[in-house]
Length: 518
Image (cartoon, rainbow, N blue to C red; front, side, top):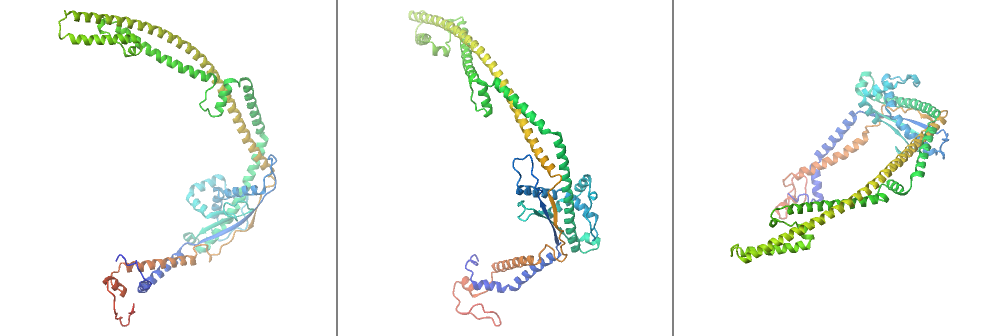
């Protein structure tokens, strides 16, 4: 039935739903019941919140040119406190305190400073309970009124979510919901106490470091080093920075660029000319050696003229052409006549004379090559001497550039050190100014105590609503899928569609439902 759902009428949809209404209702009821049971049996979560207020001290930094605004100060403070609250030290201290008092009674007073734990004990607890710490960190959050990114606020909340722990509750003999609500409240209080203690410790440490730092006066030493390096650089510039050195230093400062100036440009040109001369000298020496080997042949008729000579010596070219013509004539007459034939003797004599002339010309060409080799070597020696002198200048120039770069690097390094030390002095001076008057943090409200009968999640009515919607969708899907795979004729419309003829009359089933009448 490929077109079964293509032209579905409202009457057929009603028929499909009505024919499977009981099954659909059963599906919806089962889904809702399953979700209700699951929600009822699921662990319940409880939330406790404590609200804190941070009041800036109003003390300004005496080393800053402009006073820090209240907005920036409070924003920085809130971001810093979020990191402190979520640190391993605070969370581990709160959990260790929670583990020490599993009973239902809380101490009426906050723990004293001596009651908290050493760093070594905190580290051992974090190492042994890493997975549990990650779970707890997901349950704790620091909330500001405008959201996690809105740090310009003087109030913030520490929020703790805690689930039911049924095995723990059974061991202690209390209700799981009551224990979970109590643990959320206790952990919120412990985190608040640990945070205030940790904040005080950090403020005291910062104050001590600031006092020690200011006593050492490292900023004065850093400034003296910077001035000394700057003076050395200025003296070097005054005595050396001129001519080619100025151009090279400018190129170094601009990242090079591939531009050569002064002596460097002349040295590059000299190297190019010297390379061409050396190449020409090698070619000339090789050609002279080849000619000399040819002149050493015992039989003059075995002379071979190098191609390079043929390209550059016109008389030898003419002699070579004459020799080729004489050889062609000899080759043509030799098969016809004997060696005593007068014309053959004349051609051989003329060919021998031509080869002798060729030897003379090759000898003269060798002499010219000797002169050329001498001239090239003399030019090469002059250029080599000039290049050596230029290279000495370049080496001296490179040493001066390296010295300039070293001095400039010293200036940059001492300037960086001075800036860092200045920042530390600024921070230290601010901390020293706040030593007697910290940013005041106070608890506005005690940690909220969640009711055991009012868990934060799961929310029963919301889960039932979602289950009802999902059950309806699942029931409708079941109804139409089952109808799609049912190939029986169930109505007048099915009969007309499959038989291709109209139904004139129908007899309804007694006591049954009438589908359609005509």
